[in-house]
Amino acid sequence: MRFLFYTHSLVSDWNHGNAHFLRGLMRELISRGHEALALEPESGWSRSNLVAEHGPMAVERFRRDFPELIAHLYGDSFDHEAWLADADVVVVHEWTDPSLVERIGRARRLGGRFTLLFHDTHHRAVSAGHEIFSLVLEDYDAVLAFGETLRARYVDAGWGRNVFTFHEAADQRLFRPCPAEAKTGDLIWIGNWGDDERTSEIASFLIEPARSLGLATTVRGVRYPDKALRALAQAGIRHDGWIANADVPAAFARHRVTMHIPRRPYREALPGIPTIRVFEALACGIPLISAPWDDVEQLFHPGRDFLTARDSREMSAHLRDILHDASLSDALVAAGLETIASRHTCQHRVDQLLSILADCGTARVVSQLAAKEAAQ
Image (cartoon, rainbow, N blue to C red; front, side, top):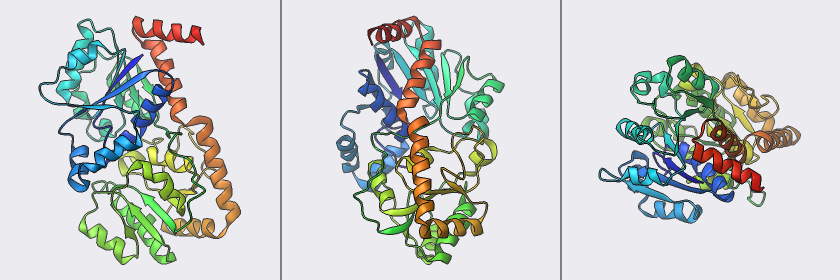
């Protein structure tokens, strides 16, 4: 089948975590014999910022890291209807311009034979609900929401006919342990600043414990204001800016522990959504400590897959324990790897996606799925 993904960006992961998951989904689909293409706006803020900071070679780097993935740019004169006509499945991400969301839906209503899915991987449904309410989604066959609480929000508000919980996951082809890498540091945190959505949490769960324990600490991420950079420097923490997602497994492998600091909208309004870095870290086999979040969907086994710290004091204690207790560190690594491998890879999510398409896909898609299953 031919899958067409409308993305904010596939090429750029600058402050854009959804690119990680879409790359993994597309690679898995391609490995199963499907065709998967991405469309992204030529003026998208993620790609624009990436090129402004790192030059056009950052785009070439994507092509080198993911040679099987193809992304096309679109502008005002782009013939979307021609591309839609050739697609079997169209997946439209929530960051897509509202007028284009409606235009794609209209193409489906006016005889499009493709199955049309809307994919939400953000917190705007609760933090800026009016923006989602204004979207025209009645022509979409289903909504994919990256957490049960988000799915419930869509259902309660009447946004979409069929709404499925569709969590992100780790790209198992990329995120895996790198035992050949030598340890060069203690703690690494990979996360963007986040518009004051976790400013105090970064201070209490990252900066203060790293400073008090004297840890060799590295932070990777973008959009840190000068005040934050000064606070990191004063604590002896190295900030190295943006990191290409393809480099993350090796970066994790060079450190002995990492952490998860959830943004406040997820913790308070969308419990059960960990964001993709938890999946990726555990898949890479690095011990993880998380600031508080409520795993209401029981995706993981807190206390076994990772440790949870309620405050700065507990974070310091957990860091100290992991760094000085090899058996604890090894147990966390083994449990995290097992949970990811058994439940949370892009292979699992493609299995789920194909199941969703079998339930609510167009006749063309359902017949192709049946034919493929019969041939296996």
